Figure 1: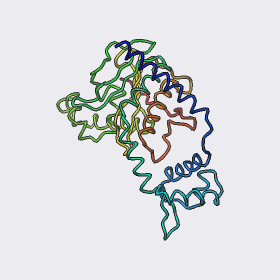
Figure 2: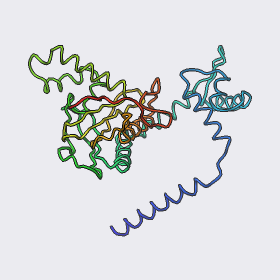
Figure 3: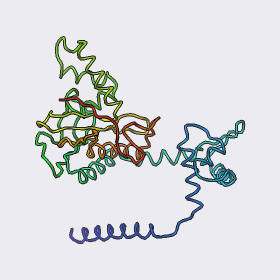
Figure 4: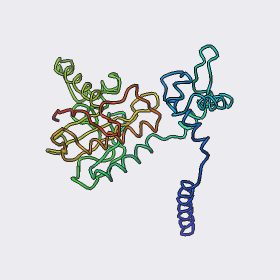
Length: 296
């Protein structure tokens, strides 16, 4: 056992060394430029003209055309004979599908959770939708105030937790209906007040990009949750934090910004591409939207 452990550690050190060496080696510029052209095609909302590809890859039209000719020959790109416009080819699709098959959303999100908690020193959770509702599958205490009521398997309420609000906003109502019935009983379930409250919760999350509540699990502790989407735009998990309210005079909270950025990065790794840039993310990848100033 000891020899096996030593061997594993040696391989790990070698892997790290190989990565460091690779980062210092000179690459092939033409390959890197070719992938800039592929990125331009991937980021387009549809087939692109030669001029659009050139602009989006910072190349001249003549340079872009030479790369496109090679990409078309390899099947990585295709050109419509009628319009002359370019798009991703079948080989790009095959590569993309193979990459997606190797991606584990929970592993990516768990790694992001660990990095985020180390950065902001707050308790963090990762939750998925389970039979009973929003279920914590990863929990890290962080270095700040401990939230002792949280743990693996915790079921968050829909109406009175930031994580629950995110699920309410992004899941179909038929998925959340049974959980709501367990939280709200009797005539209140069909009341105008509940419908208005649900609408306000959904609008708040969709407009700001995350859920935000204060004082639910611990007095004066705020919780925030941010969605993680897959390549089809489906909600797969929610990252969340719990800690002191850090909003400044302008309403910005650096911990919430880090949370939103972490969730967005995982979504990007899962090939999620929002139709528009979320208002809570600025050009530098941090949030700048308004907070949902609701109380638990």
